[in-house]
Length: 338
Picture (cartoon, rainbow, N blue to C red):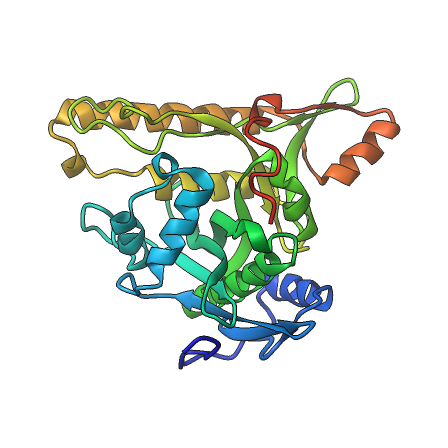
């Protein structure tokens, strides 16, 4: 029934997970009252309006049809994966039947049971340069979408809080420390991401300059016969944004690990996904090329600096020149207002 919280066995939250401080900060600044501040599944209430937050963990859940529709209505059908792929990802299975980290979907519904907002992402294991686990993880954000009629009401922020609670519990149960939240963000949505703690990534350069790391969203679909980008697929420059949960500035190696974790999650296709070895090799060349360009730029740049929009204004007034990744400033303003 709408408004009911499904039964779910929960482990006690662990304060040693650094993102718990971020969770508490976001809860203190919220206008909503939560039925439970330590569980991702809960009800929230503000000014007499009540919503139910739930993490979808089963790829067969009928509620995913509503999530898919909201994705398609917001971004266009051609820009999102088909529903069957979404369902498979929630179950932690790739399109080829191999296991992967489970894609977690957080939904916010009103008292009528209508989908108001959703948040999607995955908790990814970090690996060192030798490919060995570091004992840490990053929360990679895929989508954050709110029904246009219900934007600017704080619902996306509440979904994010539940997503972090869920991600840190997953990390805890896997014996990992959740170190970062990271993702690609449009310039039109930066105000929201800044409000929950995310910042763009810059490197210091000579002449009192900061240069934004140039992140390119890779092509996500490939032709099985050729290994080339599939028809309709392509690259798009975006802003890379990070929240390190208040633990101090991440270093270059930690950013590299986080970047490679979600590149691997999005781009690793098995050889069996292609119709011939040459196509597989061509796709791997593409992946190696796009990741190498980012990593080489990261390593060759100066010390990292993390800035919100307001902080960029402040450093500019102090005489610092900001070299922005302006190619990422595309799309319709307001399209992703939360």
